[in-house]
Image (tube, rainbow, N blue to C red; front, side, top):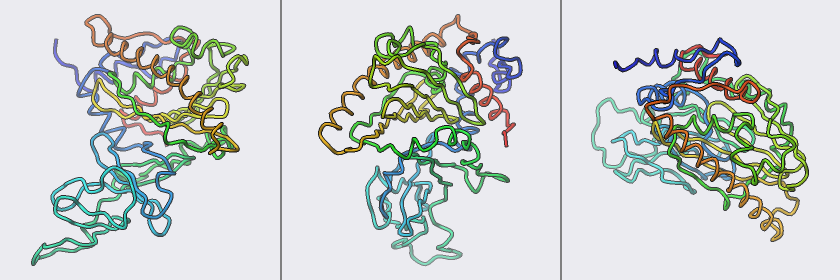
Length: 374
């Protein structure tokens, strides 16, 4: 059988048929290397994507680093209190300049010692010798657009080079979600010691699909760990421009959950799960066509945040949340394995539960096709 083109794979999903009359995207959306490469280029190199926490850059000189689909970046707080983001690639030989996270007066490349200011401008290029047509101001670290929403830092990789209308307005994209959540995010504070990163043996969309299925899997995958504390595993779904929220009432048997749970999603790869007086933020990072990394940060609303009793309650609640995460990882890895089998081609949506995941697939189709929603 001839290998299918990207267009053929993309159009195997029809975003116009409606939820009750639609098949899910084909297995190739999750297993085809060429399709994955197009996602990297058309989604993760062009959209606003979450990369870290605002509190990682509290003071001037504080910075953190990372990668977005193989593109190293650095985010730093400048002396002017402004956040700067730059491609973390030396303009001399391409080495990665800043390492991990921390605090610095300036960045120095560990290869040949080129130095860069926080705003990315070239500070010094030692022992460069006589040069012709060398303009120092043209050899700074290349810029990336940076913005924040709540406690999360977002980057747009192609930023000012992305053409007309780029970057998109992050506020415009998620304004409806911001209004819906109100001041909830401003009351929460991160406890970094509880953060954890998982590596999954599945395509990044498998994890996203699982989190967006309207609670369909909760009864079967999270019986004792979550479902028993909810009035119903079916979640109410609200769809916004480039975001969604799934809401469920609790039955009062699990104090950790409070009176309701809310699972918010921001396209393409951010989840904010709010319950009780806590929130876990999940950032999905694609690694390869069948592997992804998910970073979990935990936020809490405690009046005496640093008190021993509060810290103990945080650890206890996170321990139960991690059980749910382990269960999700198991089923996501299983789904990827099944999609790679010779028998699986596509599935069907539950019209009762899976509105949010259907809308995610529709938006993904439009972004990959190039019909960007303004």
